[in-house]
Every structure is written in C-alpha cells, then in structure tokens.
Amino acid sequence: MTPKPHAPSWPRSWYSDTAIACPPRPPLAGEVRADVCVVGAGYTGLVTAIELAGKGYSVTVLEAERVGWGASGRNGGQIVTGYNKPISTIANWVGKDDARHLWDLSEEAKAILADLVARHAIPCDLKWGYLHAALKPRHLEELRDYHHELEALGYGGTRMVERDEVPSLVACRRYVGGLYDARSGQLHPLNYALGLAAAAEALGVRIHEGSRVTHIDHGPAPSASTAAGTVRARFLVLAGNAYLGRLAPKIQSRIMPVATYMIGTEVLGPERARALIPADIAVADVNFVLNYYRLSSDHRLLFGGGVSYSGLDRPELAGLLRRTMLKYFPQLRDVRSDYCWGGHVAITLNRTPHLGRLSPTTYFAQGYSGHGVALTAVCGRLLAEAINGQAGRFDVFARLPHAPFPGPGPLKTPALVLAMTWYRMRDLL
Figure: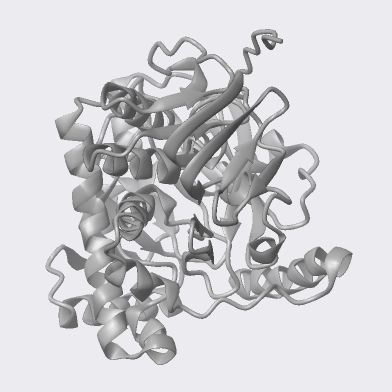
C-alpha cells in the first residue's frame, strides 16, 4: 500500500521564512536496498552521504521530518574554532598525540565546510570573523590563556581585543575586551543544510522526508524501518543526534538534549544594524551559559541564549530573551521582536563529540556540544572513511572517553539541572 504523502514543515523561524526553495521529498515506501542507510538529514548525515556518494556508494537518507528540521536548521549559525574544551584538557584524556590530531581535524572541519559551500554554490551567507567577548576581568584572563594555547598550536587567526577597541567591533558597553578570531564565522544554518541535501542528490543520494525510523537492526545485515518501508543496507549510520530518541539505547545515555533559543528583531535597516556590529561579525560572550548573536542578511539582530536543561520550554521565552538582549543593546528598546524559536542540541558529559560503532556495520556520531556547525563536516568525512575501510582518523575520535550522564532514567535531567544552576550562579557572580 502506497503511503499518503506526508508534508511536514519546519518550525517557524527567520531561517524557515528565508529558506531557499525546497519542495518536500517523498516518504520511504516499500523495501529499498542501498550500500549505506543514513538516519537523519542534518549536517552529519548529509556530509556523510556526500562523502560516500563521492566514493561510489549508493546511499539512502531517512529523515523523520524535513531536511535540517532539527538543530541543523535552528542553531545560531556560528562556526567556531576547535572544541567546547581546550586542547590541553583533551590531551589529559587521550594524550598529546591524539589531542594534536583532534585539533588538526577541527581545522579541517572548517576547510571542508568552506569547500562544500563554494563547490556546490550553497547560498548560505557564509562570512568569517568572530568575537569571544569578555564580560569581566576573569573572562579576559581566560581568553588570554586560550589565545596562548592557540598560538602554541600554530593557529594564527586570533588576537586579543582590549576595551578601547571593542566599539569598533560591537556597540556593547558591557565588554571589557575579548578575543577576535578571523577564522571562525557565521552562516544561514538551514540554507546550508538544504544546500548539502541538493549536493547529495546531485551525486545520486536518495533522501526520504517524513520517514521516521521506528526500528533498526545493527546486526550483520543492518536495516532501518519506518511505518511504510524498510531500507536494507551493508552499513547503517545513525546521525539523529538530539533527535535520535530511543533507537539506540546504548548511546542514548551518553548525550543530553538541551534546548536553546533565539529571537530575531524587526528589520533595522543597514545603517542601524551595522551600528550594532560595525565589523559584521558573529559574537558570543564566554559565560558558561552564553549569549550569542549576529546580523541577518536583511539587517535584523539574531540573538540567542536562554538555555533550558530541563526539557521544558521556559515561560515567556520571547520576553526573557528580549530583556537579555536589551542588557547588551539598550539602544534597541524601541525595536520589536518578529521571531522567537528554539530547538535541541546534544551535549556530552565532557563536551566533545561522541563517535563510535554499535557493531561492525553500524556507525554513529552525536553530541557536538555547541560546535556542530563546523565539526559535523569533518565527522561526516570520517564516518565515510571508516565505512570505506580507512578508520584510522575515525578511531582517534572514537578514543575520546564518554561516560553516561549521572542518574538513572528520570533522575538524569534533575541532576543536570542542578549542575547547570551552579554554573549560572557562577556566571552571575
């Protein structure tokens, strides 16, 4: 029986309202065979599909909703150097050699992203330039230490910004300085995902939207089944990240879905928008629970923060984010907010990506912990390399230690909420 057409859509946001044309793709129907079945049409799944198709593999991608429906289409659009943890910390876990390899891979991630955008002419407003902004002297000292570490790694893209230079970059009086990174940046996240999907299809990849996977078999002959069909493959890639759900209980406990939110102001016009961020760069403070923002292509301020670790949306979210925005930009008191949206990202306990195998035929990547816009590009390549029999670089990532979040079952979320409350208080004090 042929399933009824399912036309899910993206939650409304500035991204969805400015998305490139993308008619819904048909859901999976019946039994399909492929070399590789990818579950999830976000950045990880799509880059993996592109890399595998380039190596001659037949690939089918199953997406429960629309391409980029999850974090890939709702995030802050910020491309950030490195990882959520310093390389010195990572070296304590895996040793200096693996830590150096991981650093090199994080740099390769940005190069892959830039190449994908250029090679496939993806209209995603890619720009470079980023400010890690310090709200207090302690932050500035932490950024100096980070700057020294980056210089020791041979990274030449950063410089310290003192208080008197801040106004030339961003019109916020709260900052005491910061660290400028010329090789981090920003893009339109949903259009990047849609561009990746089009590139994958041009290489022969089949993408089925409205095809929620309800069961996987990760044995010698892996498969993924939906309500209306099954893909039988030689290899399976799980790329659902925060939206993978209970498909793979063995790895579910290693990540925690965390809600993050954004607002978009009304159109400010080019002059007023540029007055807010004269350098037209992406900006984030360095609180543990950070705020981040940038300008849109149509001259709005896109402002993010308001994280929820409880799984519940915070009440009066738009008003809360607006009040936070006005602490940074009181000059916007007369400006309305036209958009408010949110979504889930996946964090790991040690805040580094979690890559591995469920079996010799089933691979996964998840838990980018706020750095997924860039790191998904290299992780997609590494997944493809491993499936193609070259797993050396993949195994460097797989050696990162990942413990489950504390607390059995329903106690896991309250334990994290208590921990995050402590960090919020630290930020405030």
